[in-house]
Length: 58
Image: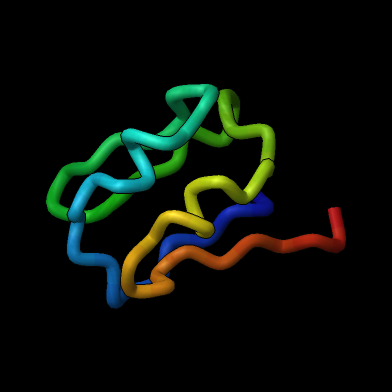
């Protein structure tokens, strides 16, 4: 998987709002649906606490 939600995620929901594929839900913390995620990294760009890492080696 190219997107990793780190333990410091507080579930603010910014990633959910900005994900163009609607691949993220929050249940206390963000959860990425690997089948929907395109690894675009938009979620990480809008995370206010940098709790999302994108693996660019894919």
